[in-house]
Length: 320
Image (cartoon, rainbow, N blue to C red; front, side, top):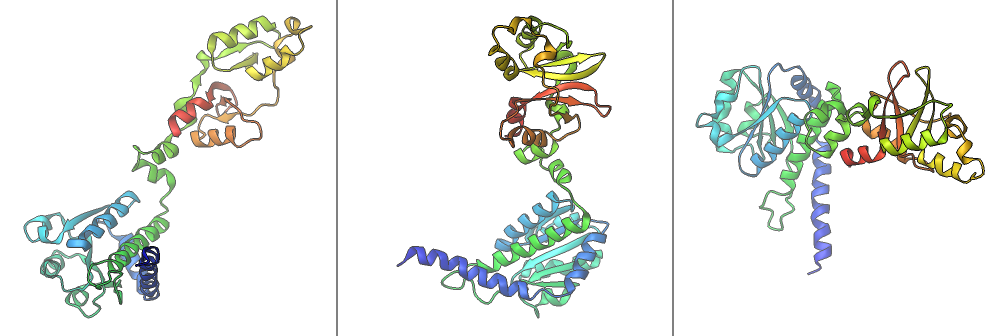
């Protein structure tokens, strides 16, 4: 057996079936999406077996992208879990055949509660399809399973149909990265999208501050004491420049005059800085995406006043 070829054939089989399912999508999707956008309740996804597992994923994707959703196992629904369904909810019922007993037993109750039903099914003439308000045809002609028995292509088609619904709702509801981050605060993505410069910066009272007329000894002492890799040159409450460790190393090449230099002689007048409300990931990109990396940046408020500094080490430790 050519296992490599067989492995690729599984992908080919499922891709072929996905294309067929894709081509069956028609204008009724407008009505489905309208119902989902306008509902005042939640989206209850229900199924059993492999369809139930896919249903859990669909519900989780909806919930994490701004659509209130819960999953209800159809069998458990027969024994009390139907209580989670309210009149304003919409139910997405999943059954490849459309003749799953547990699903069809709860459909009359769901309709009595007053909910609209969206069927994800391959049985267009099945009992579920006939009882539902909307149908998304996820029927496949052939499973990837060599016996054409185990749910493979059919579950993939169902999963993609759920992703389609969630993705379109993201666009219709104007769901943004910031919203996504709120639902994922524990992961690296959440930190990237929620963390601002102000959350990691070193505040003004921790900075090394000198005047432009201060001598090089004062500059070096300030740099050494604060250990931030930057000295800010401020006159009359205005920052006129910054001095980094690199500036001091370059000044050391002028050994004959080094100890007679003033802060203004070695400071960088045209420097990069970030706004206090800047995303931390944006500040990191400013530092890294350069021919010569920057290791520390001044942080300014809306009135262009210095309020802190942020180091590349602070950002990398929080974001990456």
